[in-house]
Image 1 (cartoon, rainbow, N blue to C red):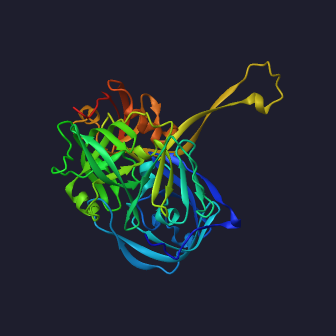
Image 2: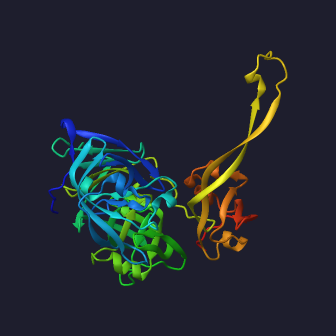
Image 3: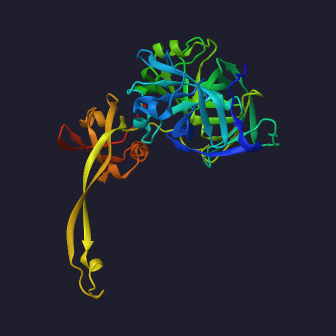
Length: 425
């Protein structure tokens, strides 16, 4: 694996830098400063160069330098994205700095991870951090440590497993085994911390990689080039050396997506955030190894959305809230006197959560909900009072639980009821 001239270094001869992160929908979101502008980026082991989403007109603010037109293509059904390749940018992640950083700026407003995650996301960064540091990722306490390789010393860890890494186009791969349809199959998987699913496998009848009888068709997510669809199922086990995860969610993306993704012909799929978060890990690109240790998430069940609803933050709602003021606060009346209360109101701008995907045959679809409905309440609770992921979590609760959803459909407010049901028949 070649190391480019552009590199991050720790300032003031520090041996490591500790960086807090947010864990949203199994994705790591870290603070990144570009040309003195503070932003939030997804940490993605599967991306080679930093990508900035400049749909919010950050170009002037960021002072994107020395740009030239480019086209980028990723997973999905759409066309390539027009982008600007920019050089000589100053990147900072905590105390780590790169003074001559290349990046791509994408100008399409449709590429917006902020709406999917409910928190600001301005870009993606990966290889350029991992190549210069030994990166310790603590999913339990939600922080990174960027270690200067010159000073890092591995500790003796009897409860850890170390897996050798392979690289193709600056992307890391590991060897694992999956138990599918009672057969143990060796697989080569891309390590994709920028994916929120557990496991993607590419269908291969010769290897025995296929969904079996229990599966459902579903929207798998959005790649750089549009929506990705495929089949979801479960595999019996995923083996990462001595660590074994059971009843693991697996997605089998459609053939078009596989054709794009399989530029590395030996690749059988990806292991992503829903699996990775179950370990605290040390990622060492220079030493080509990954060290894993179980954490508090290891035994969590792998669950599917039992409603069929996918929601995103799309636009805003105007909310009218009652506010009551006590005139006692404005007078010299005795505190024992009865307070005189005057009702007033205030108006707030809050995020609107919109149904963007609806699985055919799901409980929500059968109840009559539609794509485009604005979700106002779930189980009598106003959605605007919660974060997007807190609302989404309600659709993963126990099978059989009743859910009441109040929506606005083109100005008409309607209520729907359904019971959560596993999509796996």
